[in-house]
Length: 316
Image 1 (cartoon, rainbow, N blue to C red):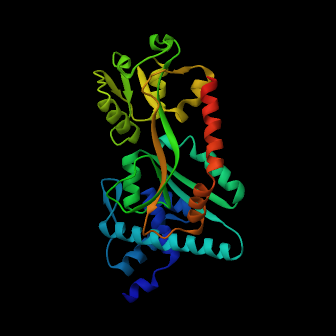
Image 2 (cartoon, rainbow, N blue to C red; image 1 turned 120 degrees about the vertical axis):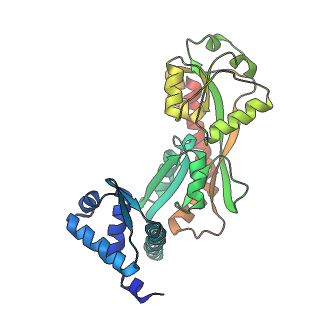
Image 3 (spheres, helix red, strand yellow; image 1 turned 90 degrees about the vertical axis):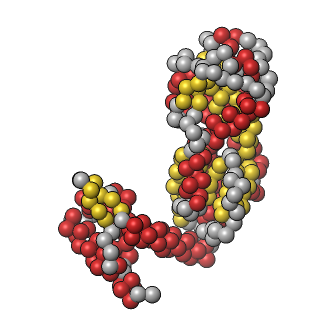
């Protein structure tokens, strides 16, 4: 190892990481409670130790160099190991503390906070960092090892993963209560095709599941609208733009209030399982391992939470 790297300090790496996340020396200075010249000095010293520039200015924008990208990944490992050390020390003292970093598909964002709240009642010193995105981005984060655990509904078959299916994610068709389809007692999937279908963006697991399902059932929707979030889909349905196929958990409040109706489509719900996953070779921190074990060993708690969601939906 180069001797110069041994002179690198944690403080320099903290300042560097702040500049990377803010893409601004001034915002990094504010975040770190430093002056801007002090931030500039720390970065210059770090560049001297590494022997390469870390940032480029193009116009008035700050960009990471390739060297900075490499250093940022290394610093993620360093601070990740320190966080793990802190957890292990707490574990040796009979306590579990630290941060759980989860990346989840957006269809799970309504349920997972309730699951984490149940977990936290047993481990009150654990905090949560939850990134919510679509399936494609979760897989990308999985490839770059950015999180402790992932929650997704389609487990990639080309990756060596440890995964745990833990709950069904029912996808249903919904429409406003005053929609003509809402007045019918029984429908087929084919009956929906005469109406515009509101769909998620490419990369969404819900969209892909619905497309595959409709293809299998030979239900072709000639009129579709693409809306890049479930909230947008929901508002579009409420506005009368069309019908949508959405996770029941995502619309339980609207079903409960009577704003939407679950359409009685014979072929639905479409069930997909949410899975908790991580690379098989990944070292799990004590907090991540505890959460994985909790999900594995507390099916009754998960089922109870799911029943509460289902009861809210059926009440509408």
